[in-house]
Amino acid sequence: MDQDQSNLMFDFSRFYILMILYEGPIHGYGIMQKFKERTGKEVSTSLVYPFLRVLEEHGYVTQEVQFVGQKEKKVFKLTPEGKKFCETLFKRFSTIVETAIEPNLETCASCGIKVYQGGYKEVIDGKELTFCCVHCAKSYKQHHSSH
Image (tube, rainbow, N blue to C red; front, side, top):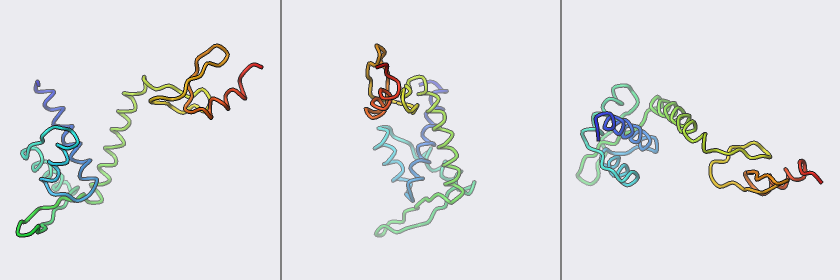
């Protein structure tokens, strides 16, 4: 992996850590476990903890010490500002993803909704049309088909 790819993966890792934090309070080791379960990749402590520190400095994360038996665990939790920050980031990311998949979308010939996967295809008047469901196909036939 070249340096640019490493940086991209680094940014993806931080984004993913934010997604995990957004789900609720969690300790650092828990972040690393969830990250590995979901992505199949390890995330290092040298990425997780400094990133949590930066989030804390910006007022996006607070930490409190909880005891699990005799062990002290630092639990990290998003602040209301941190939640807002994540929501803004997630919205921006969803726009990027939308743009990326847009060329693969088809539009329902009846209601105009975007169909990402599957959909319902039917040949009407010699033309194959895509619909989101059989009900839209039926509605389309009632309004557009030549009798």
